Length: 171
Length: 90
Image 1: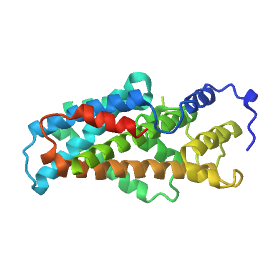
Image 2: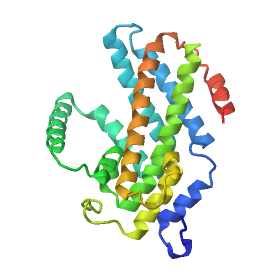
Image 3: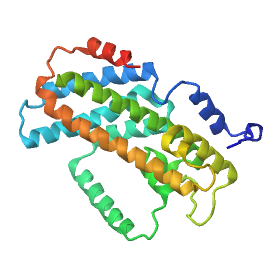
Image 4: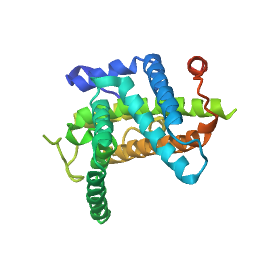
């Protein structure tokens, strides 16, 4: 596919090409190292605070904490230079501050929305992408693509590191 | 300050389509194999959404696995060892 680059003044295209110069999809050693350190520290804290049992309830609760820690660690490692990471950091902070009753109300309204959406004939893919990428609801389309590219790279790194840690402790 | 919305009926501008195809061709190896023409923007967006959902499911699975392994993660953090073995995988 031939693309005439000279007709694209779009900042997003230039940024995208610049980001492509950083080798492969998930290699950013600084971000990877930073994420790993933060995540391992979070795991140690969870280990200290949670009961060391194998009951279904405890495993489930630890699992939830680990998942939140993973996303939070990655968002912190990326820092405030990305819209998605800023949105994620806010979400994690609000989650901690939010009272239980507020959380329940939000849950119910989300469930109602999901039920309403199920009846829609077509799924608008752009809307779905906006839901999947943190902060996606308030970006223009080009920005959304940019953020999506970076978000996917970070998620890939996150998965890679989590798998390595799990493998390491499995042996 | 909501982002620009468009219904499925109104097409993307040519700029946006090219932008989208360029980005996604790098992101998703499977799209490279398809012809550049004939792949609609909607299909590409759908692939991207599915890919993100798949990554999130993997995070869920790994969190579950780590939770089960938690007992054996000792209080002595073998951080440096893990970091070394990770960076060697690059």
